[in-house]
Image 1: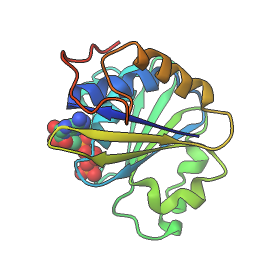
Image 2 (image 1 turned 30 degrees about the vertical axis):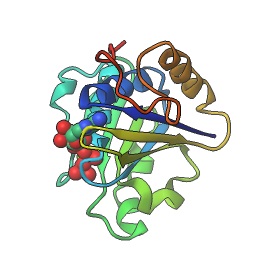
Image 3 (image 1 turned 180 degrees about the vertical axis):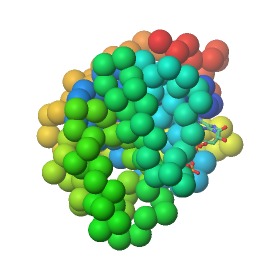
Length: 179
Ligand SMILES: Nc1ncnc2c1ncn2[C@@H]1O[C@H](COP(=O)(O)OP(=O)(O)OP(=O)(O)O)[C@@H](O)[C@H]1O
Ligand SMILES: [Mg+2]
């Protein structure tokens, strides 16, 4: 299943991440894919907020440390940035697959390791830059695990100002309220 959305500013991307994060479950893996400045870390800030992480606004890419661990209200967030890793073995050596269960893993630059992640409950989010502050987020997943989550996003977003990709091409008239 695929679902596309447009975000018109960084605040919308965070708000979208918050909605998304609220519905994540234990053992979920979120694979964030897309170029530098695509909005992966902003979206992760939102996810952290949705999971009830304190100081979620201080979330930064773990570019050098590879993984930051944040305690949420119910679930722990494992925020990874694997951009610097080259081979699948570099990734498996991290042991993420062994230590994250029970929490939620959000992995920036996950595209190189999708095969390794395939046995897990994984949802991909592909970020594309469509303008100075316009980003397209494309959610995709196999199976049924994330159907409920994406349907919730759809139902909330249909009633808000944010545009479904392809439906609206103009910025919303007023800032999209974070819910
Ligand atoms: N709609 C938008 N959503 C998110 N970020 C936006 C948006 N419009 C502009 N920006 C800007 O784009 C940048 C996104 O940065 P962010 O750190 O989230 O990217 P990233 O994909 O994590 O990059 P990197 O691969 O370097 O970690 C920020 O500077 C932000 O201000
Ligand atoms: Mg980042």
